[in-house]
Length: 284
Image (cartoon, rainbow, N blue to C red; front, side):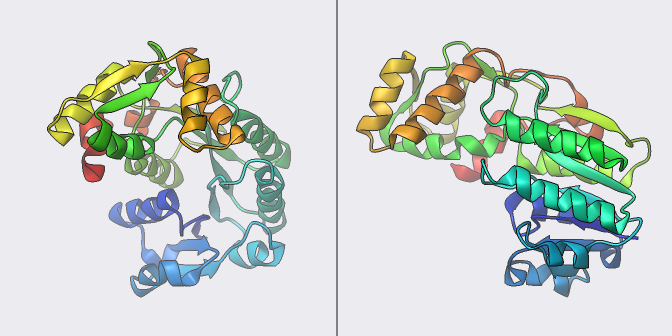
């Protein structure tokens, strides 16, 4: 029986594998799956079993899974197609008779206004309907999502948004990976649902202050209306769909969708989550 991590060629999946090894899991008991074996060749050199695993190729899913395995399904990156991809993984897990399936969902999946939520709700439903024991890891926002605004602020001195006083309880990918590794290896996580977020929720004024500290220059938060923000994004070259997505996301933040501080992430990881400044420091 192995711990199988899908999406191991991605940023979160690789970190989960590294966290498992750091926790003393025998590399021979870890299966890292991804579309490109070249990207995880270094893990193979460390004794991890690496397999080609493609959500769109059921044969690769069947080859990667065995009876009794613990499977971590890391969410696909393409809205609109990933529900079918996730269902293919769940179906393969049922065929193989895995012992448990964990899934990286979205914070407050049941009631969040986030536009990304329907895909995650559908996947959670498929997992529950499978009859397999499960663990739902409802991840909040990654601090690394603000690396690009940090880099822009280096040039402009501005963080512009329409979030108003909305707050974000972000954490780093490594924080979420540590929680996932704990859920994969510990006891008592069957049929559990965890709402994962950072220990503290910060405002965009505080984000600007963090950027000021890291960059050594004054950065201010410019508050825009949703209409002003959409116009500015379009003027900057974003297409209609992307600009609309950003404004909708900022509206959800304004409504409190990412401000929950449940404490689940720190409890699972076994340590406090990474503060905002430290999470952004690698990008500064």
